[in-house]
Length: 236
Length: 280
Picture (tube, each protein chain N blue to C red):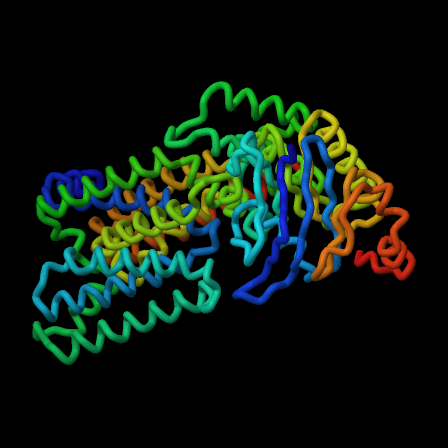
């Protein structure tokens, strides 16, 4: 059974649809890239998946094994975070908050989980460093570790490589791929066509209406991908 | 000088002032860190003006000032902290609007419906807090202690949630933290602290108690926890020094405390610069 199933979903603001007729499903272990131009409804779709935005019509069904609270989310950086005085450990640990419920403090198991995830992402030695003094790539790793603390099943990433240099970008992609291979389903919103085709297992290409959904091998052969790559539609 | 000080300290009203002052500045500094980081530094200013307006209304209708001021300020705080998410009027504009509006209405009311003979004196007292901290009664102190205890308890119990909502509301919301609830909690507690603090430094200087300790601590400390603790210690120390020197030198209490905060801010800025350079 699919982890997430979207049937005839329309999304938009104040009753005006931005994107209509979305049909796709995500199975466990998939690596889905959602691509499209600015304003095509990528971020809106992501917010709907996270339950932060209601849908105009259609239905998004989640598998019973997936609690909406247990989605790991890597948002885009906000202005507030850029000069936030917090050390890496505090931030990673805050990913465990959804497991706390009414309990005011973190349990020992949650603290261990945070340490494990920091080790996994190679940021253990930064644990006591201040977030605002890290490089862009390191900051993304911290936020990724936090997202991992929040989930056992599904990661949703919002343009994780925005503003990073090519070397750091590549290592971050490799890291995400590795996380995916360890059994966590990944949904990534991206501008980066080349990387999407390279790393993802499935592609959803939207532009007001869904232009393509399917496996990446099929996508590479479709007309729509050609149109995009040849005409320089790759918006970055 | 120590003799003068110990002479003054033997008076009950000075002891009351010290207790109230230290508790209020502790609460204000805890909240200040969150408010400054959430880019709500101006909310202290805005809400204190609202409280001033509400106080004038209470004075005109001869109601108990607390009974009117506290609820009105809480409502204003919830509205102001909630405005940002709706986006029709941007947060800073909404704060400015409500703040100036309340100030104007408050002054107008005090002028039109004169209760006392010395209006400008009354207004000045409310705005700058001149001596009211030194005229606190026992029941004021009890109220102050209870409210301060509640604020501190709330802050400790919800510390991790407050951190999550401050650092990244989007993530916290997406992973199932009720961000609206905690934003409203922060708003309510802020309102309580501001109404309390008005007695100490007056409506115009309340923001200083909220933002200065937080900014000062951020110059030097690197983690959220150490910033919170640092801000609390700095705030309490500054109020203590400010209050005592105000008593000894006979200067206005509120502005003396704020000036102390400013001086400490610059000292910490320099320390932060030097230690930052040493590391680089």
